[in-house]
Image 1 (cartoon, one colour):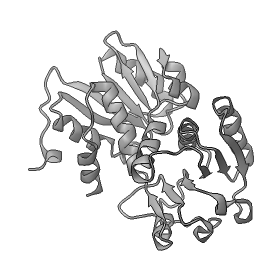
Image 2 (tube, rainbow, N blue to C red):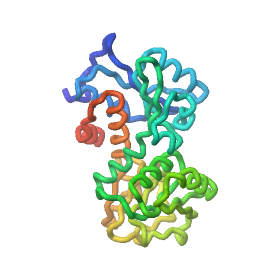
Image 3 (cartoon, rainbow, N blue to C red):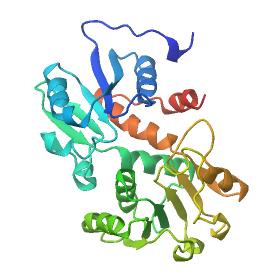
Image 4 (cartoon, one colour):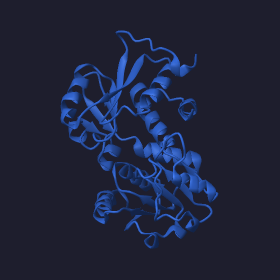
Length: 288
């Protein structure tokens, strides 16, 4: 019997953790956290709870009332959690979204955002430890893009170009992040091949859902990237996305979104328990 299949020993002292979303049944977080909890021999249980947007306030109040230790949040709750928190971490405040909540013994909630940490940590492990001075092209300007952009700014990227179908939305993201980017040039580009300076790009990041269902990204020609460039696609699944298959064909470095998921989860795990997540064990198990 492997670590993942061992039964939880749930009792009256078991601490409850969860991930909420709509939908949430697809989440790998319960497998990831319960594996780590059992490995560390911690008396917690992590579950997935479907919460509709109109029930968010009541759900959060109930979590505090029942003594839950904390929870993660995914789409569509990250931004709507902000006003429900008693305090916010600097990352959550600047990114404008909460993905991890810690509940203390008095029911007070602190909102964190571990997505930026998760992306940057996974990127450094797979590519290079020093990200300063790079030029990145980021596809998309949604919730994941906000956290990734903040992470790149904190890592001292020299220039980040946001390519988005709706220019106004990308510009709004830049305006929101500009106060935190004194040394990073932020730019907007349309999703057109001739408008993207791929030849000067060190890091190409897909933050959209394109590729989840096997779609290609028609305006990206990987042959234009320099040989040292790295491709990060935050989509993950049992098989590489078309973008990552093309990345391998062009002999470029690349990674999917599983490291971001694991490392953001590892940071949340530490915030809740004070213990380090066994990251290598978790990634090996989830890859299988």
